[in-house]
Image (cartoon, rainbow, N blue to C red; front, side, top):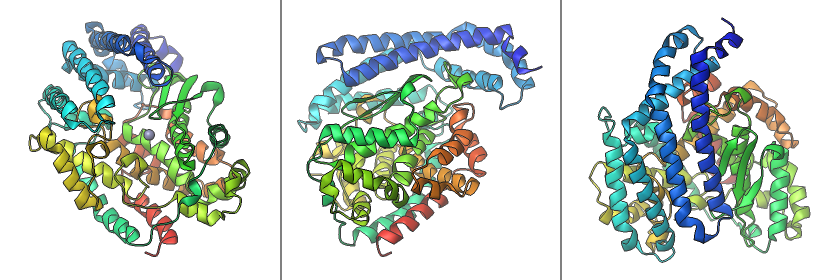
Amino acid sequence: MDTENLHQHPKLTELTTRLTEIADLRSAAQILEWDQSTYMPSGGAAARGRQLSTLARLAHEKLTDDAVARLLEELAPLERELPVDSTSASLIRVARRDHQRATRIPTAFTARLQDHLSNSFNTWAKARPANDFAAVRPLLERTLELSRELSSFFPEAAHPADPLIDYADQGMTAASVRALFKELLAELGPLAAAITAQPLADASCLEGHFPEADQLGFGREVITRLGYDWERGRQDKTHHPFMTRFALGDIRITTRVKEHDLGEALFSTVHEAGHAMYEQGTAPELDGGPLGEGASAGVHESQSRLWENVVGRSRGFWGHFYPSLQRAFPALAGVPLDSFYRAINRVERSLIRTDADEVTYNLHVIIRFDLELEMLEGKLAVKDLPAAWNARYQRDLGLTPPADKDGCMQDVHWFAGPIGGAFQGYTLGNILSGQFYAAAVAGDPGIPDAIARGEFAPLRRWLTDHVYRHGRKFSAPELIQRATGQPLTIAPYLGYLRAKYRELYSL
Ligand code: ZN
């Protein structure tokens, strides 16, 4: 049977039609969410919450429809006949996974959770600047209950966090992430301590006045060079930068600008462009269905981190871009490249995860991961969260947050989503950024020199062939094995950090 005939299989056509409708409902929700975060007047908030909830319910109903179950059953023989990496077999396999997961969760629960979370998010958005933990505490307690209820629909799970982790990072569990993080912390803890015991690097060249238009212009110049396709994308401003996909031909990014800080817009732009280039690189035949998105939260984050940190904070990259940065911002005219390079790679113990450097960033993530497991296990009550948070920051980073707004209220995740599954992907992404980059350089040793010449096509080509074009055809563990020849491993990431920071600090 050739591929042409397979696509004409009537049941497969019917399944594809249904999956495209579900993807269209999700895209509609994403368009509304993008608008909510960019241009919507505040008066639109209540109606927008209802509109998103309606779309989520319709998508859930369509996915759990008995007709989908029947089609998946009827297509099982065809799936077995086809090569496992064929698009059709992958479509049936991934649709089955999504359908089976969704049917475990009652539609009424999904709506209840959605309503609660939009209320919780709106409350948090006001309570955080006011440093008012008491205002969010009852809502967070309810979120914890609902998160445990969500987990209870998967009674076979060994740990209540497992279904939540598996949803974002298929193949990982609380136990496997915990073991991985322990191994990482054993290496990273001493590295971070050795660096932060030394004098703080001077980052004053990143402070000053950098006009917004010039910052946006330079960011656009950089990501155009990296390969972000503006024919299929655009960039707008927001409070918390993100990337969103409406279709293969419309993959948008957002950024925020701080005129006193040169790093903010630049690195967030490169980060989101990394996410976007991954999506723009998926094969056209995967668009408009469950395969047309990234493999997992961790793999997605690996692509943003790879471009932002491994490439965008490298010496080679700035050897190429620094002269044009100096032309755009005359204040840098007298600042040597080496000083700038040290400034953008300054390692510092800090309170805020999103401002953290690449050495200490994972310490912030591991604290959140441990605390959410303790909450789900019933060992940590929400009322004790601020104290537990502060104690962990003191222990792991040597700092105690002076206020909850810079402590346990700083991240949106627990206030806009379930507790569990939201944080491990960041550190998995960091680990994988090192692993994918090492595999890319092994496959094409000319990549680092090309980067130093401002040529990014060789790296993009490797990533497209080994990661991007596959979309969600393979689970993250399968994709990692195929792309790098081994399972997830921390060695390349640690090797990258050690080599880079040995040169910057005396280690
Ligand atoms: Zn990201």
